[in-house]
Length: 113
Length: 115
Image 1 (cartoon, rainbow over the protein chains, first blue to last red):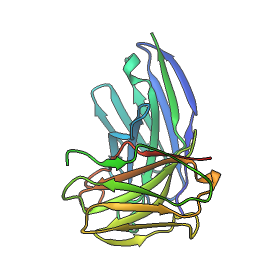
Image 2: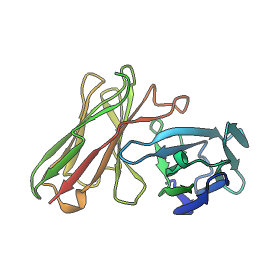
Image 3: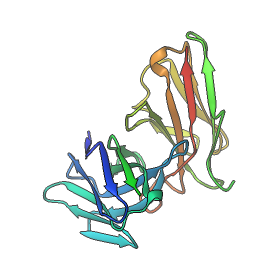
Image 4: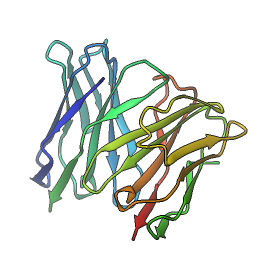
């Protein structure tokens, strides 16, 4: 089955700097890669996603890149702000029974002001 | 409803007792998922519903775990004879049609503590 590895497990950056979180997946048939942000006491919230026919996608300060050959994808946050502090999860999907996602272990991002 | 609602938000139970966790998905969402999040861990898939059917229940850890969905809406996750290792946050998510055209919307979870 699909296996998703995520690095780093924790990341501290200064406000205004960029943050990069990387994930690798094992199943070359996976075709959909969302990123979720989880704040304390809340459920994960979808922030951006990318499909296997696209190499990069941007949404304001957030971007995601996908390298299908290497089977890895990354989340880039520019001009970080204190409210970006949260746990970020990557996920990969392979179309089996419905939209089942396999998640990475998560990255705790701390933005220091 | 406006979002995915889970109840209770917190549950403390004694080892050996049964518990029921409830999920009320977004109205009209046909796909519903249960995940488990242990402290400092990622999200572990438990079961997927499409309508009232569960085509994928491969993530249920043991036969003490079961889930049902009625009326294509509310789902209940039941854990029998709870053990300390069952302590975790149980998250429910729903999606419009179970395809990748629509992402998951998660509830805030039920934090289960088995003492």
